[in-house]
Image (cartoon, rainbow, N blue to C red; front, side, top):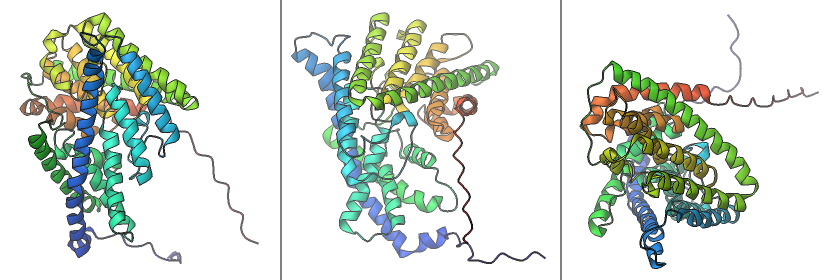
Length: 449
């Protein structure tokens, strides 16, 4: 029998049941519930501020300058100024403005307190000016950072493991209803962070509690202020046909097309990001102007609103589906091209998240294909959302849930098609991704004499 190697044995994995039964875990749950109240209120205020600034910059300001309606060229100078402000924020404030959206939805732990002002300023400026990014990544960072800051201000000797859980719970609270349901936001964070194993439940429960409290706060603040819930909601959903052979054929087509388009957007965004970082101020200002040019081209070419190309697309998803009959196939194709260009440019230079623009882009593409035989509007919409979302995020379960739960009962009908489209897009996206650069070999350590 071979000899057993000597040395210290590996530590036993933590027992999740013993952790959940402990008094400290109960205290942790109380802390997450209490933290969920102010953090969700802060997230509500962040979204309300962005909404008010969007209305101010694109409606009130042009009218104040004497324009009867907002000119189609208006986004060009506005986004150029926003690019300058974002560049200065990234260069001179701690934290570089937070998450780089071209690198995907990556959760790297809660930011430091000193980094929070820069993250908030870069995100508000980007979102208010109409850059094609979403609010989810800044909310995740701000929620986690605020939670850790608050806990450390009260108790400095708290354990690192508890800090990690509370930071995650703060992110859950900030994202509580942004995607339409606390469960969707929780699932997105769980899959993005790679939570798994025996400890998943112990970490996830505080986050779910914070998300539930956050959803209640969002609802209460909506009732009190009348500003809205800032939640992803689809009002009118057309009837979906039952899946058939043609529908599964379209699922393959949409999956392949989304993977190819997503790979092009992602690669071009990373390519441009490297160039922007070399000359941050000039390049970010120019990038903002180019996003405005993309909106101008779409508005002049199709006669539709430039806002279809601008912004994250969160608030435009419902109107796009409800008003799809007013868009020609050609207009939707131009929308996809211009939105994709603006999306790639925004990812390379501004600060925000990649989720909502990918959903809107996929929805527009699916609706364009629905003008062809064999594909109904709702199925095309749902498959486009799911396939494009997974192409940009590489989170397959989240993509399926986003594309189906938002459609209500019709989502159950189209779910088989969405799953096929998401799987095809996900597998092809991984195949199209550039191979990772092999790490340099670590030189062997010479034995001690």
